[in-house]
Image (cartoon, rainbow, N blue to C red; front, side, top):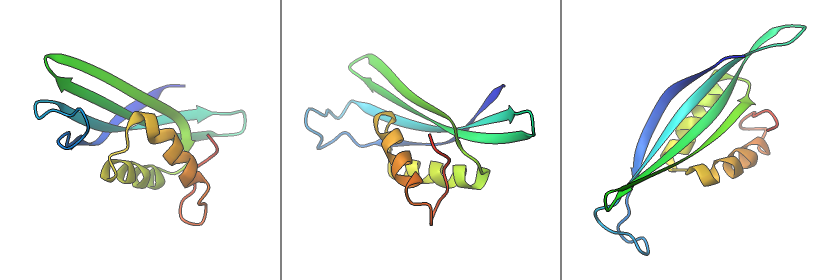
Length: 115
């Protein structure tokens, strides 16, 4: 099984007004669609995952954290809607799993396979 990581989009967080935030600190969030071709004994399917990367730059220090969630979505259109939702709401790696679990419980609006 091979995975393809495709950049979807990115955004920046405003650190002004955040407790302990400084004006020279930048926080960048990037969102990726992970494409997996899964082969079973019966058929070959394409499944989609999500990767969220948070990069902080400040005071000459760069930190990065990321969260990968593989094979959690069955449809490419749904994966792109989820990625847009994550990007617009500036969801970080630490919260992405909770958001996906909440979305999976709302099956009338969006289908996400069990994680």
